[in-house]
Length: 486
Ligand code: ADP
Ligand code: MG
Image (cartoon, rainbow, N blue to C red; front, top):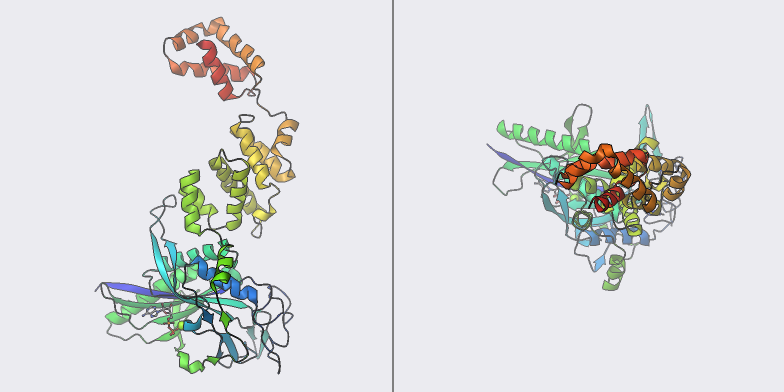
């Protein structure tokens, strides 16, 4: 029998907020254990939560980026469970129907036939996204377990998709699309290694061509794209094999062992009612009106795939170059500022960013970003302009770029210091070209050109370039030579 996989993802994203979602303590990463705590985070008696506006607005911005239906009112619930990663013994979260973000959709791109070709685009429906607090971190060793509450209470947005995906590739494409949206709007850095984006994958399989939703399993907290791809593929195969053997799939939570490449049973799935959700009496509901939505909308960037289509259509950039720029908002901003400073050659500008600047950034180490570039967007525009004006050749531009990268000097200063400017002094050039045309050993070539042999002009131009020791501007040489020959 043919089977079709059905996949829905629940994605936890750590939003960038200066303080925790229900307390004024800073949210941070990499501090010594238990430094980012206060009475509310520790749930000391009498401490009350206060909602962080930044967490709410960043969640709403996500909703607006995915054209979600936004609620008029959004409420807070307590999800009760007992585990030492939470000092309160409940988590403040939201029910799906009261979530800060209602139903929306995300455009994804599947891998194309090659890296240079755009793949198929599709929309994946988002059921809702709710705002909640993260828990602390447990470290187990020997007979002791340690807990660090630095992460407890930081802002998490849980994005829940409809079961709209049918392959591991589609699931990975959705995660990539979400990362681009969250990055573009400045909502999260989505660094999976730092746990800023964690994914639970729900998987079932059904006979191809049917619409039934069969029993699913859920793989918790897979923390890399490769992990997501591999665990979904493993689970699809496992379930198909089970059906083929006449076995049943039990609804359960399964773990993913990246080392063995297997999923394994962890526990039977708990239901919502097991958590005894109830409204949090300490927190007021949030009322959302059109004016607030309009204010946030005004501050949103273009959607990443819209931006990509615009770069291709308006600037003529090739797909390959855009697919490097688009996932990184800072690179896009750099590119657009540079093009604004010199609009005539956007393709050259993009090439320099993708080929030269990114190569240097990669060489500078894993933490380096475009923000570390000593070359400003305007300075890069100066270099592109020098090439386009014919002041220096493309080959010389590489040398100038290297010097700009190291010293932060402008292209114009470096060109002057190194005496790189190609000669385009008309009188001097004209004399040089006249001499070449008049040279008796070129009489045949000149006659041949006048007889209609276009190509022979290159022989003559080559001699001018040689005479000028490479400093003549080839475009100018061509122009003057044709005039003199005519
Ligand atoms: P629960 O309330 O048990 O968490 P939800 O209805 O919220 O279940 O769904 C959780 C996730 O599981 C969603 O991403 C959803 O798309 C996905 N899902 C639901 N049913 C299936 C199924 N039969 N196969 C695969 N994924 C599913
Ligand atoms: Mg759920």
